[in-house]
Amino acid sequence: MITKVDITRERSSLLDTFEAFLDFGVTSILPSELQFYIWGIVLDKSYSKNMLDYLPHFEENPDKSDDIFVAGIAKITIENVNGGELSVTLYEGGSDEFLLNNKGENIKLAKKWGQKSELDFPYTFGQVLNWPKGNCELSIYASGTANIEFKKNDCIPLSEYLNNTKKYTCLFK
Image 1 (cartoon, rainbow, N blue to C red):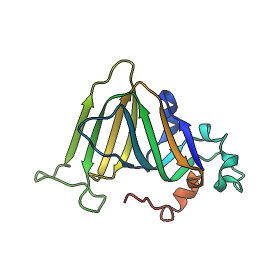
Image 2: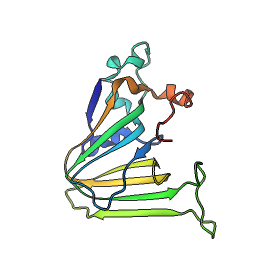
Image 3: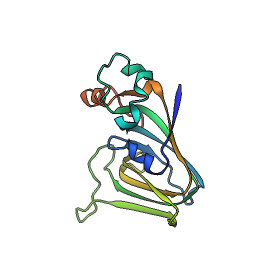
Image 4: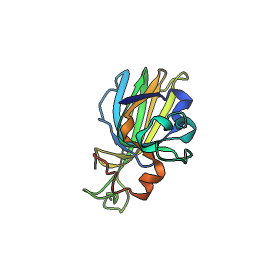
């Protein structure tokens, strides 16, 4: 079953992407309705406590104080997009080591789209970009709604993920 969560404006702070992998296709122009995929988001327990009883991996877990880790692919949709910025520090080949130039400095790429208006909210996501592979920060400036969709069966307690990261491997690696 797919769950759709409103993350418009300040509600986006309920998401954490510290373990995330972004599958974001870099384009020359951002569409007004942007969709991209992300693996490994964390939903804050203040949001998730109303959902916990309905999630399969939490039924036997008496401790409802844990955040939710989505160990699967989620879809983010943001409407009325006016601009954005992407910064990527590239990784070397298939490793997690940074790619260096001939001066020994990290190689960074940056892209900007459109303009941010005073009505826009900055939605920020970060960690690892699928391609070009590297550590990234993606900011999308939009005045519309934003939501995230994911499978309920992909939700596990964050502590379970942290104790067994190899069991929950990202598909984008």
